[in-house]
Amino acid sequence: MSKSSALYSQYHQHHPHDHGRPFNRRPVSAQAAAALAPAENDGYTIVHAGKQVRFAPVVFWIVVGTVVLLGLWSAATATYFAFRDDVLTRLIARQAEMQYAYEDRIAELRAKVDRTTSRQLLDQEQFDQKLDQIMKRQTALESRATALGAMPDVTGSIPRATPQRGPDASQSQGTPKPSPISDTVIFVAPPDREARLESRTPVMASPQPNQFAKVQGFDNVLVRLTTSLDNVERRQIAALSAVEDGMESRVRRMRGVVSDLGLNLADLEAAVPRSAMGGPFVPVRLPANAGPFEKQLNRINITRAELDRLNRTLALVPYRKPVIGEVEFTSGFGVRSDPFLGRPAMHTGLDFRAATGDPVRVTAYGKVVSSGWSGGYGRMVEVDHGNGLSTRYGHLSEIHVKVGEIVKIGQVIGAVGSTGRSTGPHLHYETRIDGDAVDPQKFLRAGVRLSAG
Image 1: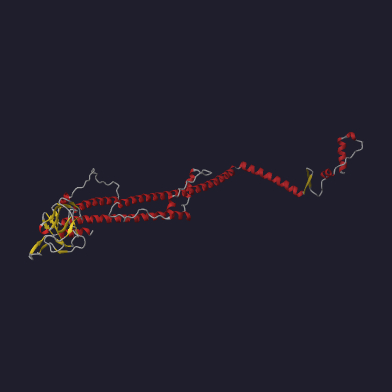
Image 2: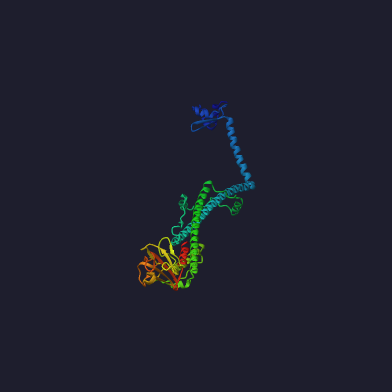
């Protein structure tokens, strides 16, 4: 039976009243006919929005089979997971392990960052401490140099305590401290993870080459500064030791000279005229934290005070030359043949060769007790130096002082001449102790000994 006959039968069953009437066929469109008419060999055709999509039978069944298999697989998987809790547990554990591993990695990186930051802060702190110590030491050396510079014995020989600095020194001083790095992380590891991480974390490697070079550069700057300060300190100590040794040696010589001359040091000190001075008595005390330099400087100050006292005392001792220039004696102290009578006689002084008019200078601090004509001395000046010491200057052509006048060391008191019992221009010079004439050469040799140091 054809399709048109089948359609007519269906229509007649649904419309019985139309039986016997002629069937009016309506024209069917080509598209509808194509949709109603299956293709025997062309597969399946789907019409949508006026468009036809044709599938081959094999492709159609493959798609349908795939969809069905996916559905069955999803259902089977859901059923399997629903009835197998251990699988889900293992899956969750695996995810947790992965999370912990991620947390461990973050914690490890965090520890490395913290250690690096701590190392940088520690290095910077150590550098600042060393630099601060160097600056304090430099300040101390500068103050020492000032103290030593105030001493006339070492003025101009004390090195400055400012070391030469390399080009990196200013940069190193201005190097800012690194800021701490934040330790905030995405996940917070459990407490036991940190302990395990510490046990697993390897020892930090050495700094990177550039960081190492920078640290070495700072260290080199500190080493250079320290070495320079060490040199300055050694030179200061050497200069201070030389001053101390020189002062102590001079004090010993002064005491030895006084002893060799047979003088009493206490009596000489008592005869020293007192200048106008005063003030409250403040004993010398060293601080409890005084170092070797301060102690040595205190010893030097005490020695210098004693040296000044001895200098004032020895200013009363006539150990200097009364004339300037080379010393040439025409007659010494002691027994000689008298130049006028030719008989042995005691010569109580030294005759210095000099020209008429040459200045005659007083050999020690004192007071003029005689000034004028005095028998065989001719024109003579006598100066009392205290403690029984006195000097006489005879045969002068001129006298420039008068009785009672205070004279100082080196002051010109007259001129060389040939007055009195004299055979020619010269200076008759005497040294007396308690009125008795003594050999002036003993005092002159003491002067040579004192001037040697």
